[in-house]
Amino acid sequence: MTIRLLNRIEVEALVGMRKSKLYALIKAGTFPEPIKIGGSSRWPSSDVEEWIATQIALHRELST
Image 1 (cartoon, rainbow, N blue to C red):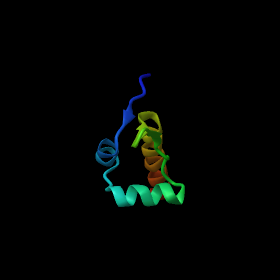
Image 2 (image 1 turned 135 degrees about the vertical axis):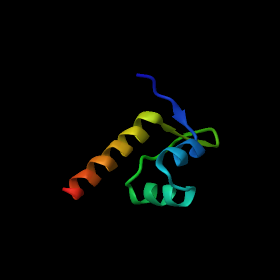
Image 3 (image 1 turned 120 degrees about the horizontal axis):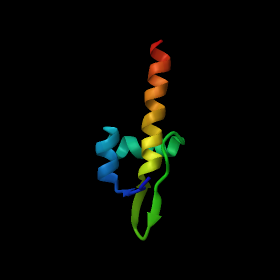
């Protein structure tokens, strides 16, 4: 498995949210925190993919 470090724009595209919503979820503890590299924020692709999978599972659970 290859883990990439995603920038904010890539994360926004994957999860369908803008910066303000993304950082609100991080502050609330419901979205993975980024790794700081220099002055940049990067998210391990595995963390984002796991969050997406959890959201899908929760949605399916609530739909039944």
